Length: 137
Image 1 (cartoon, rainbow, N blue to C red):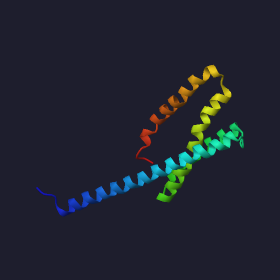
Image 2 (tube, rainbow, N blue to C red; image 1 turned 180 degrees about the vertical axis):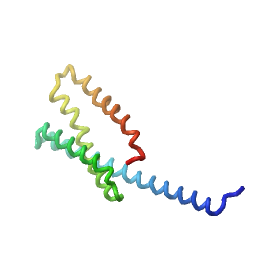
Image 3 (cartoon, helix red, strand yellow; image 1 turned 90 degrees about the horizontal axis):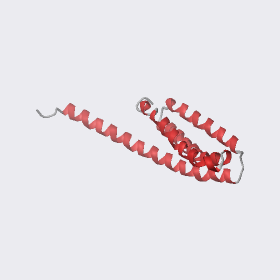
Image 4 (cartoon, helix red, strand yellow; image 1 turned 90 degrees about the vertical axis):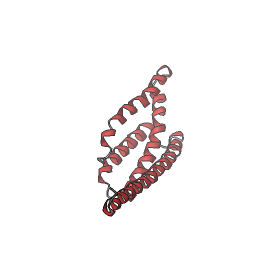
């Protein structure tokens, strides 16, 4: 039995709806990636020139990351999502270069290789807890 016009209208609207979210998702990923690159380059200069103490820098970036993740459930429009994702990308880029610097600053050379491996290992375990949040945020 062929589809009725109502069923074809519903299926086409669902396809357009999912395509729209796919385009929005692509834009958000691009914005996050560009902000991450800027954060890695910009905050790297801040740390290299010693404009901020390392402990203050790590504290502020962790506070900002927590605040931005806590702001995600407050999403009401695309512009807010884009601003939060770009700010998070900027801070994430700075954080990505901060951890190896902290490891080399506070640990002996004999312990650095183990610590560098553990940085990514613990982050991977943390990301396992993020999958149940998909679709609820």
